[in-house]
Length: 277
Image (cartoon, rainbow, N blue to C red; front, side):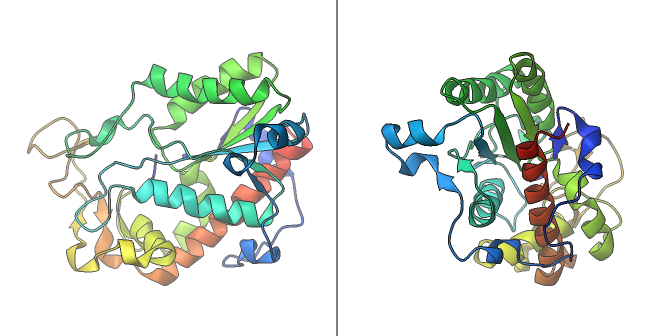
């Protein structure tokens, strides 16, 4: 993670109250006994034609499948997060779920082997082309289930292009949507990557993907921008690839944050469905 839910028209979100669970920790996905959404790739093109209507809300998960997350989390951490949130949304919301996008704009991690990155123009155009392809057959409302922070830049640029074409486009700002819940449980002094919170989330969602015996505290206050393995290099020095204190992570902290995120994401999708701006 955590490269942010940001809207092409941000201020309306806080004004909408929906009939969704408000208690942090409420298992939103459990509200529906069976999936309410549709997986686009499971349909034939004839079936897709019937579902890709102007009233449809199309959700596009976005999460890096190969990006460093310290010595204790896997390279596919963000992809796993996107897929988890995808399933929770499918279980609780009447959406059309597009395939997960597994590459995007992640310039902060390139010094760590295995990390992948697209140029900002490529990342922007990737999303624009996906949306245009689907919008050509009817849908005008798209929501990117975004699990990154740096990805906000190309998504904001994509929103500007798509808005000019009459397409409503919104995306998740993880730091904003999870912020209040994080503040309840956070103990680390600083950090945003492979840290206490992100590790806790993965302990809740996929504990088999976490090796807490290798979790470290690596939270140098020196430097700004991306991470660097080079002492005195440009950015925050982090030999481990962590920025924060992963040793403080617990499954319960992860539950609080993840469940709050699910509630917030579902609320934003319903705002988009209703046309609120």
